[in-house]
Image (cartoon, rainbow, N blue to C red; front, side, top):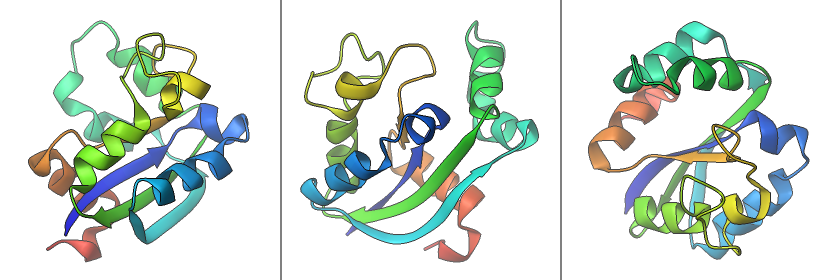
Length: 137
């Protein structure tokens, strides 16, 4: 079994898309191990979370967006969880995402792409430890 972090971003919470996101998690064969209900998270947390992007042109806009509203955090588990969740999410750019994916259906562009998922085992471990330190392997 593999684990990954999923974040339901502020645009998805505000747009009322959480139910569809939970359906996609189930359809992908993933299990929610633990969740943190939707809440506003401060810029400091996002600066740590997205530290690898500091200095990139989109960094400041991303931090502002992520701290602008409520996000929910899910620890997902299942066979090939990282790839299964990334497939359900779709490409980062909603315009390039499969129209049936979450981002293709609900994303509007830039950081407003409704969900986040870890991009590999190392980032999953790091991201999970930030939000679910008691769930580390």
